[in-house]
View 1 (cartoon, rainbow, N blue to C red):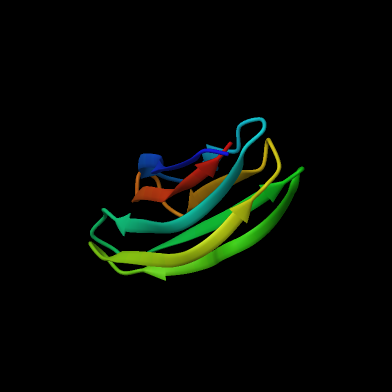
View 2 (view 1 turned 60 degrees about the vertical axis):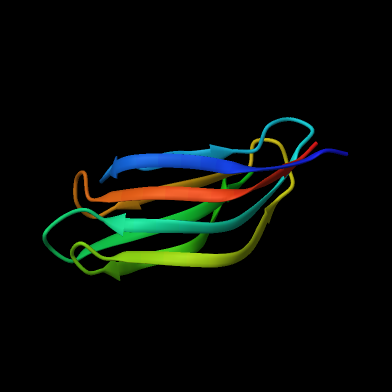
Length: 107
């Protein structure tokens, strides 16, 4: 099995429409090892981050407030082991967050 460390997603201007940041490819196990969410606005905003497993969403961050021009960083392990599982984000204001997700894929 090959393990490939990589940047899994980079999303700019995440806003009020839920966006899929990353989807697990076929025959792959993915481990998210970290993410950074940066508020690019001049006011405090809220962000939601969920893992979608087969159509059921599990909250990672729920209405988490990040101050203006500030960032939130996560370091740990979130295992996504089924093709089609995904990581999604949505904010309470338009064009308010930049998000980078790091991890590795095992095929």
